[in-house]
Image (cartoon, rainbow, N blue to C red; front, top):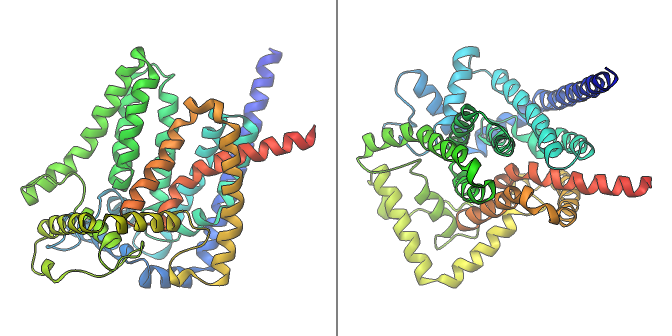
Length: 402
């Protein structure tokens, strides 16, 4: 009876802690959206051009035109975030607040999931530190204010990794179905995660052993089945296999065209004028391949620049080059990065358990040194960096305490 009372007391304390973290994170995000409303609306309108595309697709869907940006552009963006937006618009309207309140809730829930992820991998002290850091991390707070994929994607990615780790110990095959669907939704939110998903499935296949592979097979099947309806829809429109989007060519060209310097470069060849969406995508893929073949060393140099842009200590974009943005970025990113690297060293003997995180860092870096490098695209991997950082901070605290 005494043991049960202790367990209940521990659970009660944990619930109180998690409730506090959730409310604290939510209030920070809500306050940011309230006090910086004018800035958010200006940035969304004049800097993040993809917000307008997502909003347009959501409105087109609600008006019965389908998940399209225009009759000529029907598969340039992945479908999940516009569907998410359209659901919010349908239920609560398309005014400023509904989407930002919901995204603040999702991001606060991400802090809770990071807690459970850290607790599973390491210990409760690391879990508490990581939850607090996620709650105050400026880049997470920043993106809750915009109709962009970041907040939803980070939520889905964190939940997916957490459930992958839990799935190994669960007996229910139904859980494999659910996690497979969730993995597919994560890809449909941001296709750049696909390399990480594939590499993770390969690694899990070898790590889980024979008796657990049945679960993984179900997971893979339902990941594919979740993506398949969108691929079939694209095939219906284009009469060609387009599994996710027609953005591959544009992104590849932006990061590697003759005038590219590592970031977005809005130079487009005259030859794409008058081409259909699918023809344009294929032309830009082929044209970029030719440029890389002609100047392979330039491509390697560009990869280096994109690597620096991806892991930069300050925002790359000129509109975010003020002292305030630089200071916030520097004092939030550098401490996390330095302690995270130390945390990786301290946890090196647990490499099997944390291999998924290494794959996350590797796959996202590789994708963005080939396409376009940006601090924005690094944000989804920062939850994992924060976990390693928290382990190092926990180690320091315990050493001082001794």
